[in-house]
Image (cartoon, rainbow, N blue to C red; front, side, top):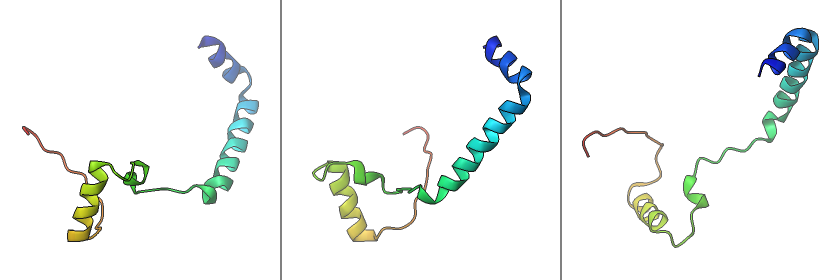
Length: 73
């Protein structure tokens, strides 16, 4: 760890240039990132969770996501 810290401190300009180049590459790649909000797409079709969720969606519709914390359950 000290070797890495010493390398970064001794070569500040190289470190900044490397991070700048990596940042530009990351920004250029942003349009190519796809986000999948449907976690059930990774489940098998016959999964009980997926079947239950499909039943719930047919009864109530597919609304937004919510996070809930319940204590003493």
